[in-house]
Structures are given as structure tokens and as C-alpha cells.
Image (cartoon, helix red, strand yellow):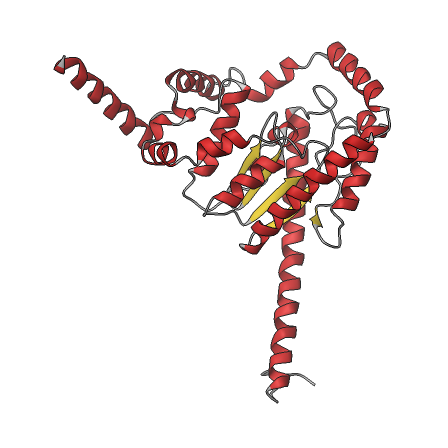
Length: 319
């Protein structure tokens, strides 16, 4: 009885050492649910500063954060939305510098039970100090991730190639035409009411996050132009732009018009997701420069006012 217990303790200690020492590859998930949990746990238990954090739905999930910043992280999740991501940001102490919030018709999708389970004291501290109990280190998932990494290292197949292989042109076109037919209907009053309620919840979360010094920018992910121009999607965008006006919320500019290629009319394929992620990166550089200039102008203006109040002028004040 004692011997099996000692063997078990030894194996658990070994596995713990391998995970803490980063010897084992961290899994990205082998199912939709597992992938979501991995993303959430990586954010909740992160111990280093995040430069840019993306929150949103499965549309955002397609974006590789490394194309945006070396210190970026993606909390875009299939089946959920920005609401869940913002709730996680609100509940964690180490916050990112910038949060990019996806705003479209998906904004109401969340999971209160997931939030509760993450911050349950027993679960939280167990996974915090013993990473082997996190979803990303499930043995089967780690093994599959190791195989994926090996295939990519040997240039046998890449994740982009896997993604492309999943796209069936005939199926994609059929799916898009079905979606266009369904979305060419006016937005119902019930849908408008739900969007207003969801927007109110997101505004509240954004306000609390901004008070902690985080810069929040809103954006939307493009899809197939034919689907994006349908009546339903157009009215959703129009309503959401009114609910999140640009004079009160900072929006990233819309990307240049192009024929965005998707797998189903909504989700960008890897190559186009990369193009859009790089567009975000470039816009953040431009916005960061403008933002810094605005801060400098405000700082100088504030200093001038303070000096005027005390009857002094700034040093080297040129006339």
C-alpha cells in the first residue's frame, strides 16, 4: 500500500518539476472548450506584464497576437465574447497596458459559472502554485501538442496549412449564401433591446478598467464583404456605433476595403487573419504616437496653468 503511494507521489513531483521547468510543451487545447480554458487560465495566472490584450469572440480568436506585439495575448474565445474577457481583466490585479475590445453582435456571450470556478479560492491557489493541474498541462493534450510542434519544426505541416486544408470552397460558398439570406432581415426590436443591455454591461466594465490606468480601444473584425453588408449586420454596426460613440470611446480605424477571405463568411482564414493583425499592430503604433503627443500637450498645458497661478513662467520660455 505504501509503495504505490510513494510511486504516485514521485510521479506527481516529477510531472510538477517538468511543468514548472517548462520542459513539457504547453498545450493550446485539443477541443473548443479546452482551448477556451487554456486561454483563460494563461491570462488569470500570468505573472508578467502584458502589453496588448485582445478580448472578443471566435472572430478575434483567429488573430495571432504575436503579429501585433511580442507581449500581446489573445482572449478571443469561441462561443463567448468581449464581456467575458473584460470580466477577467476586471478581476485580475496585473492588468495589461492596452485592451482591444471586439464590438459587434456577439457582445452578450459570457459564462458566469466559468468566472466563479476560476476565482474559487481552492481551485485558484491550487493551479497557481501547481501548474500541472492547469488545462494546458493535461497529459494527452501535452502529447498532442508535442507532436504538432515536431511536425512544424520538421516543416512537415504548419498550422496555417491545416487551417487552409479545412476550407472547402463549395461548402464555404454554400454556407455564406445561407448566411446572407438569413441576415438580409431587419434587426428585430428584441435584438436591439438585447444589444443595448449588453452594451450597458460592457460600458460599465470598460469604465472600471480604465480607472485602473488601462487604455481601452474598440474594434471589429472584418468578414466576407457580402455578409458584412447584409441588412442585419449593417444595422447592428450602426446601433453599436451609436451606443459606443467615438467622442466617448476610442475606436481603431476600419481596415482598408478588400476581399477578406473567410472559412465560413465570418472567421478569417490564417493568411487574412495575419493581414488584419498586422493592420492592428500598425494602427497601435500610429495611435501610440498620437496618444503620447496628446499626453505631452496636456502635461505642458497643465504646467503652464500651474506656473501662471504662481506668477512664474516655464524655463526657457521663448518669446
